[in-house]
Image (tube, rainbow, N blue to C red; front, side):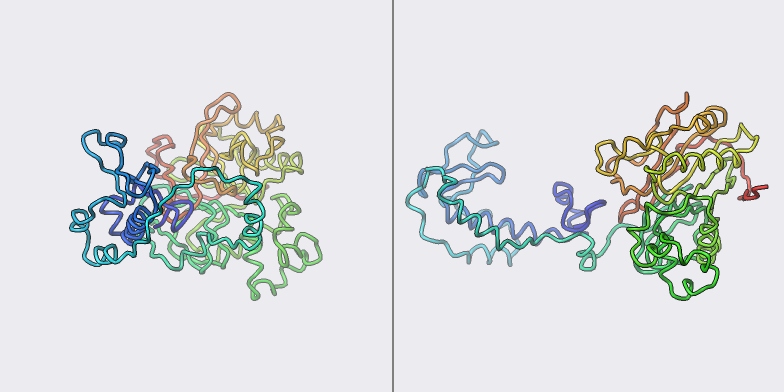
Length: 422
């Protein structure tokens, strides 16, 4: 069984009873084991069940009471007194034999109705817990044993996706149209010569590029080797994230150069803009949400937005960054442990730019928000309605169709890049 967010063995069981899903996901053995379990339990304990409700019998020989289950016309409960022959005839032969061979223990003659007191069993429970070994597994650890039956292709006209974190050197999906890759695409120096669109830099790209020895040995990194954040990127990336330079640092241009070699048809946007089919996309380099350095980060956002917006106030514009610009334009729930209430927009210049220019939306990734929580929403910001999109990769979610949120410009413009800071 496979699931969009939690992986194998954590799927919607109700949906798996559909014949089409049953054939694909192999649920039959699980249902067989469950059926054998129910039969064995009812044969050995003084209970009856209709598969949903369980009724405790006064003795193993008591007949289940009529009209206590869902079907008011007849008793559907299974107990030790039930005749299994009719039901067994409808089962596959191997399963029928297994159930017939279940060893029935001596029926329990007396039902213990006294509650178990904590004082009596506390020591036993504590001893058991000391030796407890969890058997649950991280879904990622189980993926190697399951075949992905979902399509890895999609035909979204403008496909938004982020946080793929590929481990095997290749993209796990394909789309022949325009893609917006919103950072954290690779943990294995991925390359793809066919994919087209735009790409903004995330924090995983930094450590990923520097993990390649041939790249790391290049002299162009010499100016950064003694910096604390750079050393952490190489040795312990999790320690580096809060220390990363703000996105106008020349370091990111070197990262862009390396990424461009791996994605020859992609435009890597390091504080740059492109126009595609009448919509301008501004790609800002914000690898992480630097809440403790919010003032410095928002000064950078204001300066870069003003430069890239230039004087064109009419063209529809979408701002793309790996980490969200700020809370107001983020899909992250305030209930999340990653949410920082201070990470709000506190820069008047940013508010003015959003109000005076035709900025219609913002796209981000970074926070690994489940697709079931929603991939887009409309928010009120700076006196206008703006869409926010976050599309995290999973085996089912291979991208979000952005075209449905964009105005119909009917303009087939070639991809154009703006970088000049002069």
